[in-house]
Length: 103
Length: 194
Image (cartoon, rainbow over all chains, first blue to last red; front, top):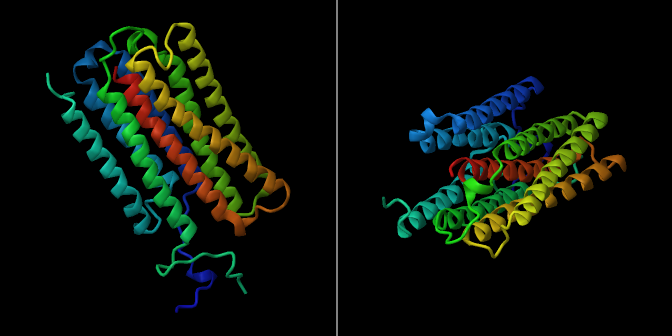
């Protein structure tokens, strides 16, 4: 059995405080755009794809940088991503099953 | 020599507590996935009002969304401070995160109270049932997160939250950020896509 020591610890690369602040700025900007898009009548025709894309971008930013999945071990990404995709698949299947996409 | 009692390594070399917590977060994806799906399936099928566009307050919820996003920033700064052994900033950012969480819960309490006064309750219609269950579950998670953060804050004041305990803060942070990303989805799906 391998002997583990302090140096065995997987080291994450830390972002600087400035980087965390910059990400917060981007998240705030995206939120402002989301709310702005919601109120602009011209965007109503393609509101859903725009808002879902912006939401996915915010989701990815938080998960990659604040939850450190971008720099952490890939196994954590897999443990998180697989159930996430399963949840997404279940959601889409349920929406089809209940005829939500039927016009 | 490092205390092996403190480290919980798996055969992968990764800490088992962190591994288990990511698995827990994965299961939480399924929980919130089912709640959000249920909301979407029953969306627009309420026979009586009030419904989404009659009652949802986008400006107020936008502010609470911003509040929760900033709490995520405070959380990651708290972890950074704990890891570099900066006790003062660690306490400051942990307290800020908990405070922002409490503010979010205050917004939610205001929203729920307003809705009840406007005639929307858990049993009013399908929108009320699915909305209150979904956002209530999320609010419950925020409340647990606030208690967790306050526990860490107390431990910091007791001198038991040094850099060697950074993983405890990291795991609490994972929980907090997950609660934040769930809200990112809820804000879009429930509030903006009416």
